[in-house]
Figure (cartoon, rainbow, N blue to C red):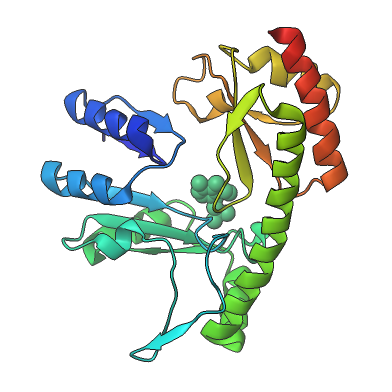
Length: 261
Ligand SMILES: Cc1ncc(COP(=O)(O)O)c(C=O)c1O
């Protein structure tokens, strides 16, 4: 089965075309893209979209408090999903509670066309059987107790926490990495992608120099299907580190970048 994994961008779009022209070329790209364009391509060239979106609920620019009730539902300005654009049953969407309830739960849910979901259920039954019954029950009870509004209020608290963490990391990046690297302000999730300027590959810098000083970042090649390819990106997480640790980490990294140029 041919597969193309992309989070977006013009680059991502080109890769989708490559995939159509050279089937079998598996690709991973990590930049923003216009989901409407991808969806239109999916319809034109008749391919399925698997929307793996565990960070969906952690959107920083949403106005959580401006709920509107339309036809009895709470409607909010969430970013559009591929699923919301689906008109002909070609999107399978995977959501997760790992990022907003607890990562250890490993509970999520999938939405999509019935025949495809039935195949996934069959596959699950002959592989993992099912998720832990205990954690399924735990999540189910919690959601029933909270209701939709309670869940969204919880999501808002979680998002507030990550927004502050993101801002702390961005402040450290501005302070130490300006001129040495470039990045986009994340609008969701718990990661900052950084591209080091003038460096072809971050492998030695991140895996040897930074690691020895206990500065832990994820080199971008881990997200390539060809992990031997050079990559100027690394991924910094803002989930656990304190603002002081973020500051120290980017200060150290800035020094290593300067030494490597
Ligand atoms: C893109 C992506 N998909 C899926 C997952 C896994 O989600 P889950 O904990 O529900 O298995 C993660 C992170 O854990 C992720 O980053």
